[in-house]
Image (cartoon, rainbow, N blue to C red; front, side):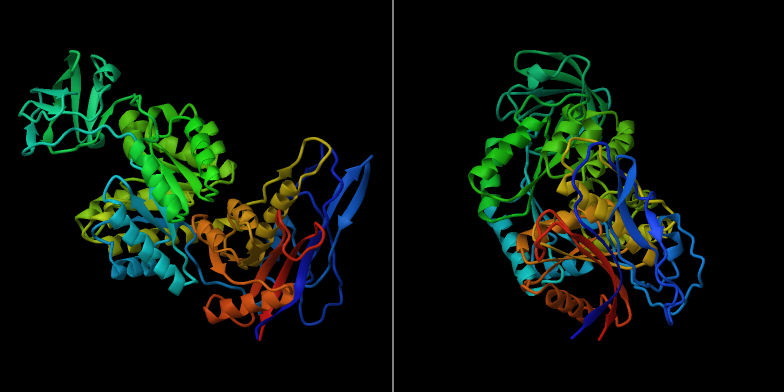
Length: 575
């Protein structure tokens, strides 16, 4: 059986809270360990946690053990004055950390294709409720669950994406060619489909638009200026023409439709998702936090543990961004409608702002829409699309999403592989920079109680700093997912192996950057469980004899601890 030999550690007990205390990632005292370490060449300076009380520095806890490393000299900017050994064997295999969300549709809704998508790099399967029916989506859910039952080391989560209050044109007998300068009308009368007029599915459409507004078809593929309106008709002049087909999506530049974010159809689809225990709801056209609270109340009434991901895609959502994300479990940057309702040149800065806001709240963020749009019909992407993926990764997105590329595209597997390769390459370059980035301060200014959550955050920061300096992956055991989520927030350069005995927690963690969730039953013996985890990783090819790992024992809810001790260890893997 694989075993682990502890060669270095940091331990700390939760101190009595005191207002105004600051814990700095670069402000710790370090003490030299034994000078007489044999056959190592380097002794680690162990982390000393301390707090100031009445002008005195009080030690909280310490641990001194030797560690071999050629990278330890960059930990917290401390320079080693003893020889560096070269024989220490670190984990160098690189795992993609940015997750990939794939929309399942006619091109990929078979057992064979879902297996191939998972093998190519899919982490989350998205069900687009704008298309298909419950029967077709049930088939996909069953297939994903079958895959998870067979392949426990590659967990796939399920995301149900609501249709939302979309405004669409009606059915046409045949496509209508719109030419620049011609007149064309939209009416709220049902069933109109002539050469110059088509119905819309929204009764208040006439009230929502004003003379001078610009109506966009399919996110801007065509555009029309509103010239006048009657009680039941909006009369327009074509600005940018094209072929108008049935049921095209309509936006008004700079405005959101006065429709509820969750429609009757959406509630039916949400109940379907609850019945099937999906992992995430992506909610379309969220304008404010009220709809998130409403959905959360509904889920609680059904005792449903499903996370809510609002899609930021309406003009009204931007002023309410902080409140929306605070009430939610993450966010999706839905750039299609966002770029239709707001000036398209604002989309890059809004994407960066949404990612930054989610990161600050330790919540996952997905960048979506048009990432590899050309690969719907072509086997290779444009260079701009490649750059788009790389920028999303560099900005800190947890996940990047494919829509039509995998739903109805000609090259779904190639699209996933391109996304995987571009993200991996970008991450490998970024990973080299992490070792030279100083740790961020963890500050606490507040009341008398020093919170357990803040203590966990501080240790996640230090575990990340240690793992980055030593070039080791992180192993963490979790029943709630809280510590892997904190570790993901600090973006360690290596993989976070998150072992959990809760299958739902494992699926939820698939959305977080850098986290590889693994399902395993825990025993009452922490060391026996750790040994089994190491053996599992070695059998899976993730670790080899002689590799080093950083082991974290911390979190909001203890698994084996009777007290609130937090522990970080660097372990050498032995047979």
